[in-house]
Amino acid sequence: MSRRFSVGLVAGGATAQVLGLALDAWLHARNADLAVREGVLTLHNPGHALFAAGLLAVVLGAGALLADSTTAHAGRHGVRGGLLSVRPGRTLHGLLVGSLGFAMRSGALGTPQHEAAHQLSGQSAQAAPTPAAVGSSAPHAHGPTAQFQPALDPSRHSHGEEIPVSWEQIRATDAVLRAAQAATEKYRDVNRARADGYIQVTQPIPGLGAHFVHPVLLAAGTFDPARPPVLLYDSTTDGGWELVGVSWSLPKRPGDDTPPDSPFGPLAVWHYHTDLCFAVRAGAPAVGVASPAGCRAAGGLYVRETGWMVHAWIFRPSPEGVFSHRNSAVRGWGTRGEDR
Image 1 (cartoon, one colour):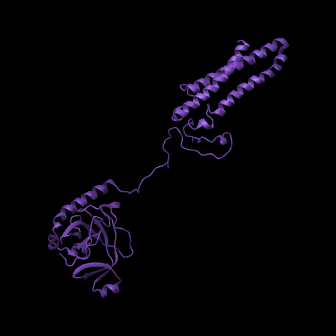
Image 2 (cartoon, one colour):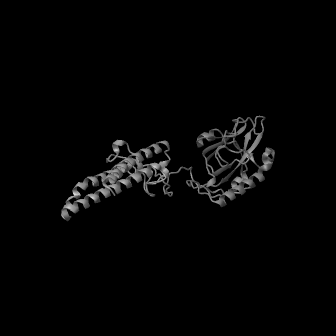
């Protein structure tokens, strides 16, 4: 290989590298997705291919010049002269190293500005730094990797509150509610309910309705899907009653706030009341909150603590849920003048 050809090869290779880098930068400016799809050196990218060809030309040309220089001087000055003649070749060596260094600084071989798209799986990719941060130890941020990563724990996610409910509890709940609805359908007629022993004990309360209690079933303290001890009614504009739900009640030991076991599991939230006063106001049953003395003065029945209760809105769906304490779809019209 002639010396002139070798020099031309080096010069042409260096030019090809510069053009390849410029072409790669232009392609990335037009299509940002290239950074995700490309590898460190992707030959189907024209810029990468041109840069690789230029780098190869520089290596071949510089190597030929170095070998030619060493051989020529060795012929004239012997082995020692040939070894000394390597010194001028350091210029060529510097050119080769400089070419590689320039490539790495410019990002073609995966340094900071290009590395974000070409990290190995399992490593976090660096966010592209500003020009002032390149090659410095300035603080920098790490963003998500550009390549697919297996899900890790904890991974970024969002969810609502988890309820530890079993499939058996869901099926049992459905069966209980269907049985209760079938058994109490007849009580849409409030007169049927009265005839079977249910007595109104509260006024119609917004969100809660009026409570009709069966004293015998309430005292039994058992859970029977087909025989709920409490029926929930809403008052209607024409003075009637509309069945909206049912309620079960189970005994509660004073000081023990552990909810009872039931087929509903965690789906239902049981509750209880304290300091209630059941009285007759304006000729109608009513309930309020009072002290023992205040309740006696009103001629009412004071209940320090009720049993556990749960509502099931099986005739008028509740926007808050079938077992919600209050049902915003239940209007309630305040204290009624009489028990219809």
